[in-house]
Image (spheres, rainbow, N blue to C red):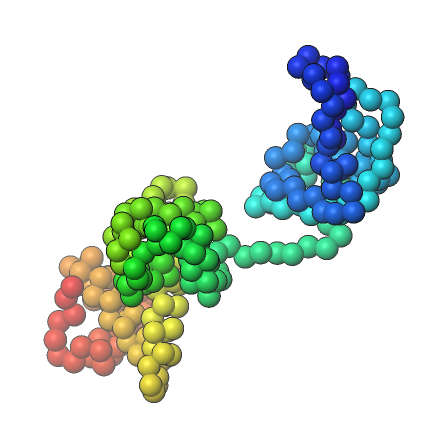
Length: 260
């Protein structure tokens, strides 16, 4: 909102606020969820009336600036917790653009990397990019989204020293219990990756049967090892009757013992 000279200690000169600077333009407020409640009240008033007062001034100013706000947090949950105003939420929610996390739009990875690399001076740019580098870019989850990807590209450029970018030039993946994927999600991702690779072959056929065979083979081996080859106990853990398990084992392994 800006302030006038003498509005508070240290205010030695007039400072124009964003709403005044953005006259006939657009203001972008990133991470709107972090706005203190006291400021949310003032922001709501500006959106409702198109009027505001700089700090220390009794003279109202008007604005026609358009406001775009962004956040990665769940605002309805914050409203329920009392940390974000519901009236401001509805005033902001005129038109919503939901941007999926980077890991859900992997087709954007390559153009983003190429853009980031192009931001470096010619004297620092790598001589080329290896297939292994692109594979590693696609493999990672990028939970820090575009910021993490950009930092990783900058790190790789420094490490490559104008040579070819390779996978080892990327910074190590930082894992913690808070961002580690569940076993279920890892399985889903593995199935998705396998399916995509199969679909890229010349003639993908029998994908359903082939996947079931791969998964069942591994599942049965692990459960039988855990039960010391006790098929009755294994069938119980698998939720199968013993005859069904015996039939499936014969189909998958023949007369061999399905050991890990």
